[in-house]
Image 1 (cartoon, rainbow, N blue to C red):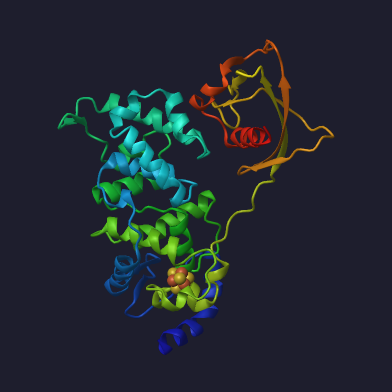
Image 2: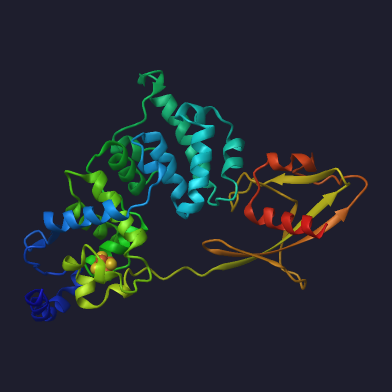
Length: 377
Ligand code: SF4
């Protein structure tokens, strides 16, 4: 190890010169291989074995890891985008129980799917999930095995589905079919950025290309399912955003440039965040004791196709007790309770019984407002 660090030290001058080109020209004897000709960095079997041993001991038991069913893995991947595993688990189990096959999901109404998705946010994922299920059933109807439509099993077919990007297609292809495609989620971006000391933002078009090129070379083509699972789990459990002293017990430590250079905790780098937009909503909750009014969000805006109480937008001098933060918007909300004898005639609204409100998919903010109002009686 001493000679390894000495080597890195002597090379640091040249590395700084090369930093702009993003690739660190470092040779790590016996641990990883750098090919200066192709500018690639690969793990050798020793590092891979350490990674796999670590995974074997530390990985979480998760239902979507216990199956090789493409449909179930696809569901889990879509649900887990932008969602914590603990929260995603509940939704995953609910979806596979209610719609155990892609045909079952395709036969559901979009409103039912949105209703099951309620509370998970990013509702375009649910709409795309449903659209893709219909597309699969239509395009695969000639391919049936044991009475079930065969789920698409090539990267290209998967990538062509609504809502399926490079990452999701790679994840399904490798986890379900053990095909040699990388699965780069946020955890893997972090591990690769630190491992290779890349200080280029990973969330730009160029950054994504760069990271993909790197992971293509790191990928263990003989065991892609195991490799992707291990890299994702290492990022989720060990090489976490707040690093602490994790490097000291990391299976990749001997090949990690971020650790050797002392830069790991500063990585990965993101592009500057866009400015957050503030919006002010006033919900008008009408009630005659048994009925209320709701409206369907039709505009291509947040919460498209969800239901809410009639809402007006704009800031007033009143206080807005609810704050709800989305990725690029900060919403401030309040509500006004209107006790009426007869429901007003407001365009775009429908009158429903209070007891039926649960049948409609509502945004999380609407649910919070409702919860508070019910607690106040
Ligand atoms: S050595 Fe540290 S920075 Fe490098 S991969 Fe391991 S935990 Fe992450």
